[in-house]
Image (tube, rainbow, N blue to C red; front, side):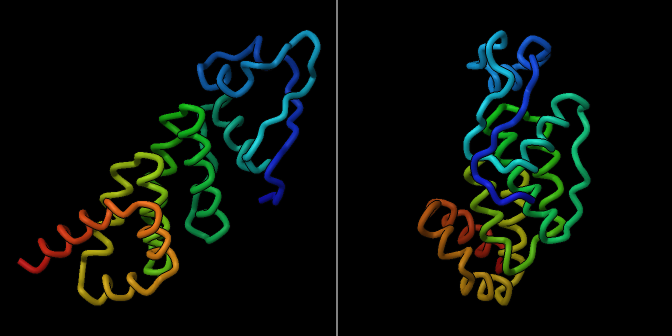
Length: 167
């Protein structure tokens, strides 16, 4: 994956051929007669290319659970949410639970909360609450600290889920 936060994507008359709301959302401010390119902020070039490929073909990239590919799925989920690509968001959200581990579950839960992915969120909560040992291990991770700071209300769901496992 590229490391640039800002990319300049060449887009020749995309707006005129755009068949979806998401294309108009991405390229809506572009003056197609005078511009050959549009600047897209805060999205990695590889993520943008994958998103654009999905818009044109309705095919998502392979999202296996290798660390760099899982990171692509996370970034693609965020981009899909930002540009209203609900089907792509659902695809990415369904792939991420396969790579959940003690080290990644809290970060993945924060991502699910941020982008309103209820199925992914439920999988993360179930993973964390499956045993006291798992819960204890997750509580020691950096991701959990981020979760507490960013989404404290999620902790209520974790406590309820953990309590339900004991009964």
